[in-house]
Length: 150
Image (cartoon, rainbow, N blue to C red; front, side, top):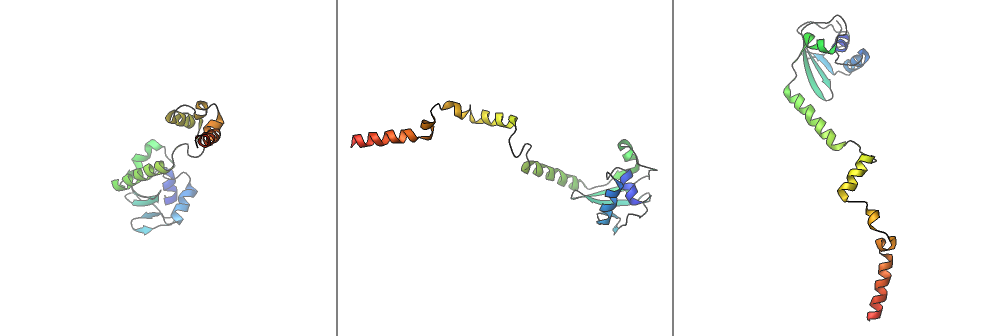
């Protein structure tokens, strides 16, 4: 079976054309050599795939006749990827969550309520006179009182 069809049939890539494009970009190799999409896959081959900045290694156990269900994939391949690669993937996901928080941008209603709870009640409701809030009328009164005192 061709390698592009094999990677599609074991559900490593969503479509066969995506698998072919990745092979053309030299992200797939068998052994140490880069392959073409027409390369035949045999049982016992170790395929190295670079996907999402992680180097996956899979060993071909059996070649499927066509695309298989997700539950049947372990019957056809064995994952021999290093544990370091999976740890690296977890680390990247954590850092991505750190920089890209859910609801980033304009706050949602829930975010607004949580911010109001954190800060306290609505600030605007504490002030009835906006002149007092901005301190404009207070400054004038203080200046008059200072002049009288002198």
